[in-house]
Image (tube, rainbow over all chains, first blue to last red; front, side):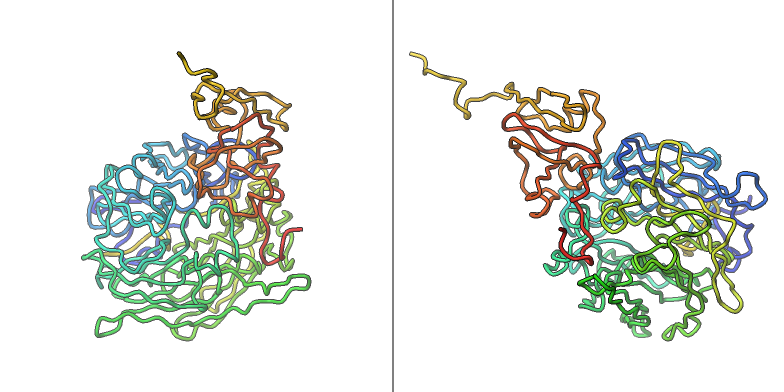
Length: 450
Length: 122
């Protein structure tokens, strides 16, 4: 993907949108919580419609140990290193949330990825008192990873700093005062800012979701704004009942922009965040998905917005409602007033689309990844093994699925592509669950411009 | 004169003391598990594949059922009160205090989780 003059990625979001269509897609595939006692693996999926193996898994790279719970992943380098010809987007870092191991996968041959190195969870715990790695972002030559717990699985965790040789440097942050829990983060270097969100302590979320834990304050409801250079929190906002469990944080891709979006998963609200002209930070709720009273359910069912992303041109917002079972597209040209322009249904607890493209859907829309040109949205159905087994117990025996949604980038609109489905229930070693996705050439949740 | 009965009092037991752990849903295999050894390690050593992940009691991947007997587990494991009351233990940290019968694997997890929006587990 890199040109002779340049490092990885693209000079700008506009240039990224002109890139060749993605031909391969890497996703994590898990055996944790399925009854198959084998390591999780990186599954490489053929997404080239002209290929004879289109819509199937073409490579499987096993992790060296059982029980990682692969979850999110991140590149060693992205467009933030575009002006450094010595860098390339070669290594995919794949943390295990449960083991705290960070598996570094060499994708030089992207149809045959290979294990390069494991940063041991035990070493991370011993050197930094951190565990449960989550989001990976590269920052030029450095890599930082949000860590959700201390070495014993208690909150609030912190941030792990590793260098380009994948050696542990130490803890990245100088001060986390105000942070109750940790989860995702996004940074905007031109505005010296970072935004981080809150899930819960590993000891709380690992065993499954319990409403009593919510009542006991064991889940996050705050968002944190950072002085990026100073590596310290400068403002925390407690959102109360409107902002319970804020997860994925996305910034607009325009590097001049100082705003973005995040969703409060349990409250099922989308918030806009921005930096004001006088350097303060603000948020406002811009989308509110109502709960639904379902017959036989004693508690109103939230939609549970579990993943959210913004198209490379910053025009559309997409998010997944993992309990209700729909994927939505909003036009966010007017940032404060998003307008819904598309919706599709896949699985879910409301029973609106139990079978799609000939496969019974286990789970519902969950992790999403958009093509650089904004026209294809890939979606997987697994959230987290213990939560999957709680809400969609069939997935442990039937596996997760991957679908593709065609997106109209002119007028808005979404439709499930009828020719694409990857059923991880049919994997050779037994059904597995699929989660976050990455393209070899970069994507809309990796690339940030310095 | 040597104190009589050394070795019969629990407080003088050494780590050499072992208990019989019967894995009921793996053909009733019987394992000799040392007092200081966790059941998951003993299963793995005997070639019985069990789900395993964090190995410190912080996640719930290795949960199984204690059918009879008793085990020592550190406080603050990932199991909540209901799960413990339902007989679940975490094999990666559970050490036998006496002869035990256990069931292992994901097939024991039917009552481990509940969908909180569906109300209490029946």
